[in-house]
Structures are given as structure tokens and as C-alpha cells.
Length: 200
Ligand SMILES: Cc1cc2nc3c(=O)[nH]c(=O)nc-3n(C[C@H](O)[C@H](O)[C@H](O)COP(=O)(O)O)c2cc1C
Image 1: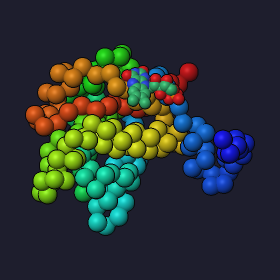
Image 2: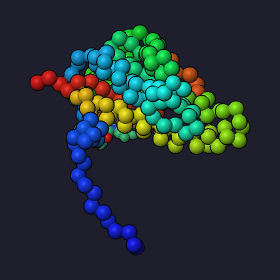
Image 3: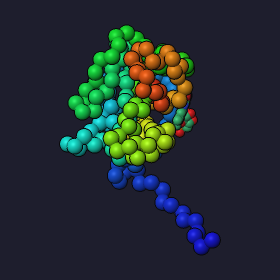
Image 4: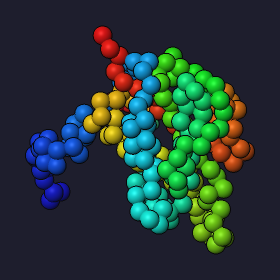
């Protein structure tokens, strides 16, 4: 083996400051204050997660062939909304407090904001049939790769903004379907609970 181990430098936490600090501060926290997430934080974290960052609609995360198979739902004390990247808006889905239905751990119902990420299997059914077949065959890993980019964007945003966050694979699949109004072609991928640290 010719290759040798290279001792990497410690990250410079000031240059470029915010990105390096985000990497350094990223972690999971499962305790939340009941204060609602501010409008600024809610807006920015959804944009960071899946917003369009170019006029052609391409997003803050990469996606194989630009398919973007994900939908993000925001579940608050007020209700359930679907994030619409094309208009950078939250579209209402169900009124009422369904936070506890988004998870099986207690903090899901306590965090002021739960994000639920689902994938749309129809997104892989592109007009070119051989391509559609290839995409459909790989849809599980393609979905997981895209969702991983989304969740990391959220983690990094929360890290620099002082928000607590936990990514959750655990959810009661059936409980989630009704309040989110999920269709047959939409499937749960992962959820995230988000809020401010508890005030002591
Ligand atoms: C795909 C995925 C699923 C996870 N699911 C859960 C979960 O259901 N419940 C939970 O409390 N934490 C969950 N976590 C958080 C991990 O436990 C956490 O990331 C891990 O302990 C490492 O800690 P850190 O994020 O602070 O570095 C999940 C993390 C990932 C990446």
C-alpha cells in the first residue's frame, strides 16, 4: 500500500466562519422549549432544507437527474402544512395539533415543530421508459441520498441558529398518513423535531 495516512488540519472555526462553526456545532438534542419556532427560523430552515436557490427551480440539495422526489410537511401546534418550494410557501393541509402523531418518542409531541419528509414514487416515472425503469429500480437509495442532504442542511442551519434538532426514523406510519393527507404513492422517509433549547 503506497498511500499513507495524512494528518488533517483542525478545522478553522473562523474562516469561513459560519460554515465551519456549523460543522463543529452540529449535533442531536432531544429537549425542547415550548416556544414556537420564529417565522424567520421556520422560513429559513425550510428554504435551507428544500428551497429553490436558482431561477430554474433547482434546489439547495442535489437530486439525481433533478427529480426531487421529496415533499416536506411542517407540523406545528396549529396544524399541518406542506412546503411548496416553487413559491417558497407553506400550504395548509390539516388544522389541529398532530405533532404527537409524527413520532413514537415523547419529544415529537413536545417540540414546537416537527418536519416530516416523504417521498413520491411517481416522481421516478419519467417519460423515457428505460430511464424510468432504472430510476424506479434505485428509488430507495436515491430517496435516502436526497433525504440525507435535506436533513444535514437542517442540522447545519439549526447548529448556527441555536435551535435543537433530532432526526427520527421512528414514526407510526399509519398515524402519520391521515393528518398529512398522504396519497398511495407517498411514503414516509424520516422526520425531524425542532425547537429552542429549554430555558432553565
Ligand atoms: C437516519 C437517522 C435516523 C435516526 N432516528 C432517530 C430516532 O428515531 N430517534 C432518535 O432519538 N434519534 C434518531 N437519530 C439520531 C441519532 O441517534 C444521532 O444522530 C446519533 O446518536 C449521533 O448523534 P449526533 O447526531 O449528536 O452526532 C437518527 C439519526 C439518523 C441519521
